[in-house]
Image 1 (cartoon, rainbow, N blue to C red):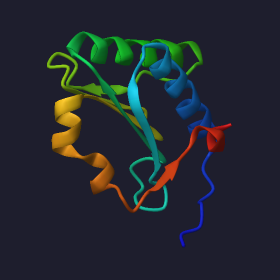
Image 2 (image 1 turned 180 degrees about the horizontal axis):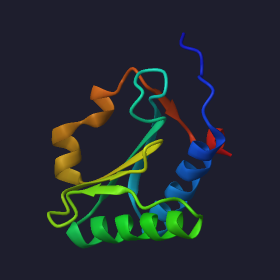
Image 3 (image 1 turned 90 degrees about the vertical axis):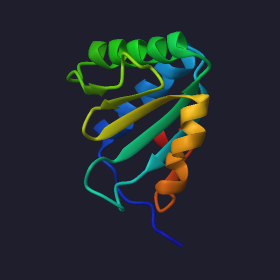
Image 4 (image 1 turned 45 degrees about the vertical axis):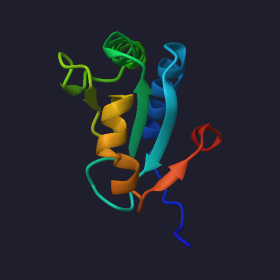
Length: 124
């Protein structure tokens, strides 16, 4: 059984704020994966689905707004115009907002199965 790695509190706080912003815009099937023991690219991946391109963009806009208000730097953003898979790279936290079809196709949860699935209580 893998040990739960120690993760920077700022990454936890960032993930917590992002999840609240996602919920506020009715993001679906939110998954948080702690990948800090698997790779150095980030501590957490947050994966969420939206029902359509407008909702996907709205979720992304709210995550950016809430993290900006909390004092975090603007992320690198990929895929905003297409709005089928938008990636927000905050370095320690990477948020993936998918259309339902693209999420099923890319199946990041399977690719990062060596990570530890985190429930929201662990981020408090």
